[in-house]
Image (cartoon, rainbow, N blue to C red; front, side, top):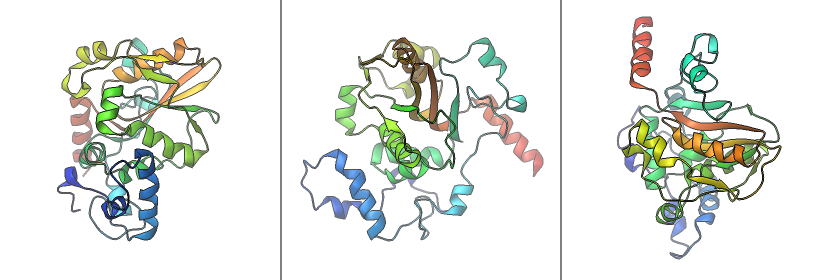
Length: 269
């Protein structure tokens, strides 16, 4: 597969459409412009460039890094018989159930970087609907992880909101982007270690309405330590949510688990 230069990959043709609008075009219009592009222009696979009807061709989709077949339902790390792992039994996350679609490994990591920093939103729209079934409560409310106001203004969009909106369309769910806010600016999590990440997002979120009796699914692109989702889940439970689950596109594996999966795969070949 031709997976080079994914950091600068951009959806083909969207620049042409955007030139029809002035610089003040609302960011909210861009997903609609991209849908027009997808219908009006030929598509190339995001990864290899081959012609395809989807954002990602079938061969490339099949090669994206999957999680282990048996994973803990709470953290999505490998676990015997797919039961709750020892780590989650000892120190459970605040949320109840987590679903991740892939490992955060090449080439998906490069694709999500391109999506986040180069506005290659097509990969979000494709990835968000790759599950054929809805694994959470049918009446769940989707809560995308909020960005701090300054970061939202700088970036121009919230990737978690883009993912949640695609999922809502696919599964006929509601998204509430105003129900929780980030009440303070936080450092970028990628720069911090596990302890610093947890401290960085502690009490960073607050609900703006009651969630009494509601089932909620938090949505984000990548989960590393879970510190952000734990903080958000705590705010939702404090607001009365009956249940809080989580969905992410990709799960970062601890190095020891990543090496174990690689060695297992090599032993089978």
